[in-house]
Length: 493
Image 1 (cartoon, rainbow, N blue to C red):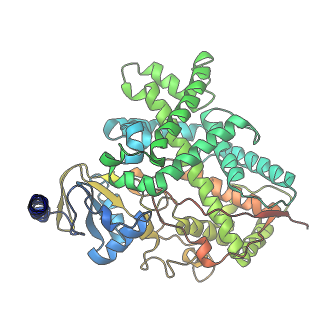
Image 2 (image 1 turned 135 degrees about the horizontal axis):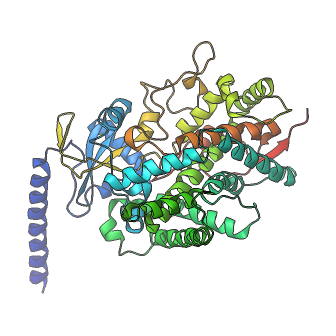
Image 3 (image 1 turned 60 degrees about the vertical axis):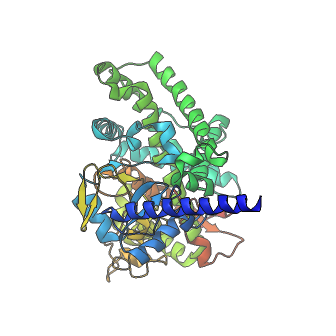
C-alpha cells in the first residue's frame, strides 16, 4: 500500500516536472518582454499579493523594467510603466495600442458592446456619435455649465439642511454628480430623497466595490477559473442587469413620446439615430443601453470619487483649504456663483484640483488596451491581440515629472511665479485614441462643485487625519476612497 502511494506520488512529481519544464521552455521562447516566470495554469497569480494587484504590478516594474510581461493564467499581459513608455504607446503609437483589451469583471456582461468595451468600427461610430451628442447638450458650452451650477446649488441647500452634522459625504457627492449626467441622458434630475435614485446609485457603488475588491482582482487574473467559483465577484452581472432594466424603462418612456425634431436628451438622439440608420446594427437598443451605462460609470463614480478624495485631502491639509478659499473670495467673492471662466484667474485652485486627480489615481491601471496588430515595441515583438496594461499610476508617480511623486503637492502644477503650468505626466483621463469621452464635462464638474462647496462651507472633521489616511490604496480596478466622516460648517462673513 505504501509502495503504491509512493509510486503514485513519484509519478505525479515526474509529470509535474515535465509539464513545468515544457511550459518554461515554451514561455522563454516567446519574444515578449521579460517578467516573472509563470507557472502552468495560474501564471504569475501566486506572485501577486492578495488584494494588492496594482502595488504588485508597480513592484514588478522596479525589478523587470518599464516594459515587462506578467501572466494571468495562460494569458500574457504586457505592462507599461512610467511616463515615457506609456506616452509612446498610447499617444505616439496610438493606432497600434488603441484597442480595448479584456476586462473580465465586465466582459461577460458587455460582450464587446457599448462605447468603452467595443473595438473597430462599432467603437468609432459610438464614440463619434456620443461626442457629438454630448457637445450638442452642452459639454464644454454654457448650457451644461448652468446645469452643473444649478446642481451645485441644490447640493449646498442639502448640506445646509444637515446643520453641521458629521456625515459620510459619499451619498451627497454621488447624487450631485450623477444628476448632471442624468440631466443629459434622461432630460431630468432626481431629488436627493428619491428612493429609486438612491437604489440606482447604490448599484453603481456596489459594482465598483465588487470589481475592485480581492475577489474581483482574482477574477481579473483567473477569469476561466473564477467563473465557476462563488463569491462577491459573481454579483457584478446582477448589479449591471438591474441597471440595464432601469435604463430600458426610461428608453421605453422616451420611445412613446419621441419627437425626432425636438430631442430632449441623449436617449432621444439615439432613438432618432436608430430610425435614420435602420441597417446599421451599431445603433441597436443594446448598444444604446450599454453606452448609457458606460456614460454613467464614467460620469458618476469617477468624478464623485475624486471629490471624496479631494475633501479628505483638504481635511488633512487645512492650510491648503484656506488658501483655496482665499482665492475664491478674491476672484469670485460671495455675491455670485462660480463659473468656469473663473478657473483661468485661479491658478492655485486649478493646481489643487489637478493634484487631487493625480494623487488620488481613480483608475490606476487604466482600462486594459490591446495591440491591434503584430507590434515591435522597445525591441520586443508583441503579437496582435495581446492585452496591454498602461499603468497610469506609474505616470502619476514618475519622479521625472513630479518632484515629490508620493506626496500631495499642488506645486507640481505651479511655476515659480505662482502661475498654473501644465504637466505632461497628468493622465487621469488616459491619453491618445482612448482618452475619456467625458473629460471636458468631468473637468468642469470638479471645478464648479469644489469651488461652490468651499465658497459656502469650511470642511472639518472630528478625526485628525495623517498622510497615510489620504494615500490611495492602489489595489484593483478603481481606487475607492477610504471611509471617513466630516462636517460642513457654513461660513460667516
